[in-house]
Structures are given as C-alpha cells and as structure tokens.
Image 1: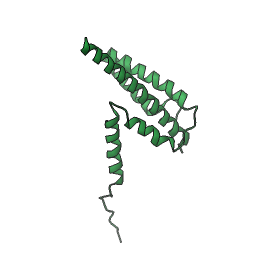
Image 2: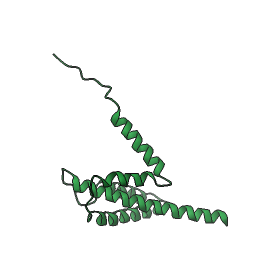
Image 3: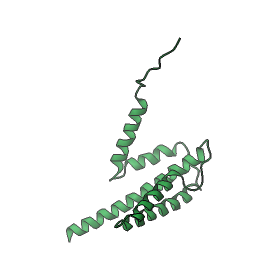
Image 4: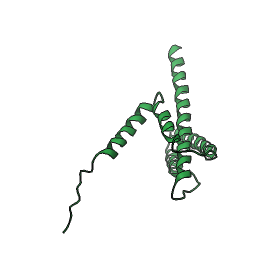
Length: 135
C-alpha cells in the first residue's frame, strides 16, 4: 500500500508541475506576442502546432490513444492558459521571474536550468569562425 500511495503522490506532483509549466509557457508566449516586432498569428503559434502534430501521430498509431488523449488535454489547458495570459500586460521584468519559476520546479527544473545554461554558454562563446577579408 505504501508503494501505491507514493506512486499516487508522484503522479499528483507530476500533474501539478505540468500545469505550472503550461501556465508559465502561456505567460511567456503572451509576453512575446505583446512585444513582437512582427505580428504573429492568433491561432496559438508553434507550440500548439507541435502539440497537434504529435497528437495526430499518436492518434494514427495503434495502442497510443492514451497519449493522443493526453496531448489533447495538454493542448486544451495551454489554450485556456494562453487566453487568460494575453489579457494581462507582461513586462521585460516579468520574463526572468517566469524563467526562474521554471528552473525551480522540482522535477523538470534542473533540466530546464541546464538547457538555459548551455544556451547562454553558446551565446557567449566567441565566434570561432573568422571572416576572411578580400582586398
């Protein structure tokens, strides 16, 4: 019984973290839409397209209907959070706070932080390819 209880708790923690990730991503998406130089489509952008493509793939395969249903649920949650997020105006100061929230998540936070650190290192790395001038 203890093992089942621990498993149930872990599933609840996982679901709560997924909800947090969805909410934070929707807020970051709202910020980027509000501050974009180029107007983006209001249909939901790349993340929703990606979720829909994966959902369709799972829906076509046998024995993957649970995954397809889960992706449908994730997509629906994201659309709901995005519609709430775009109502609020986000500032440049909000972005680091939202990213920090992602990095502090107990399960996926360390992976997110590592990915951000790697991206930052790559950005700061001096360009190793020198341009050759033609005279």
